[in-house]
Length: 156
Image 1 (tube, rainbow, N blue to C red):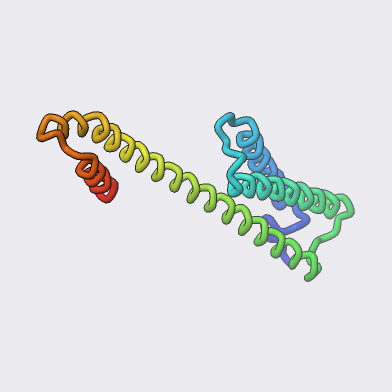
Image 2 (image 1 turned 30 degrees about the vertical axis):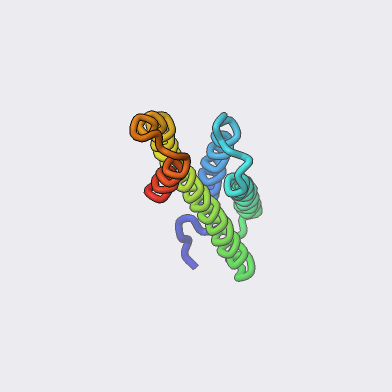
């Protein structure tokens, strides 16, 4: 059988696994050293764990490639190729799910912050300006003031 680039047990596969390990390690170091990385959110914990799993998987597969090159054997066994394929598919799916979850959480947090700041601005405008306005005209009652606040809550 002909050698395919990146096939398990070849130099190409070893190079790809080392590159995969290095990039996963860099991502892990960036997440670990970032001061603003929110580890109290479960999706970010899941991302951290999935990157650790990716690092370990890449390191194990690189070790398997090194072993295959040292003993000069091809890893063409069906069960070994199935292990490689299923393991790569599982780690990539887990990593994709974790990064998608983190992106969703970040979008939600950003959207909620913008909404909260807008609501706070409206609230401050009403609370600061409304009593003066209501008191100037006919000494308005508390019920009118409360109705105005409820109306602004519906608008926001």
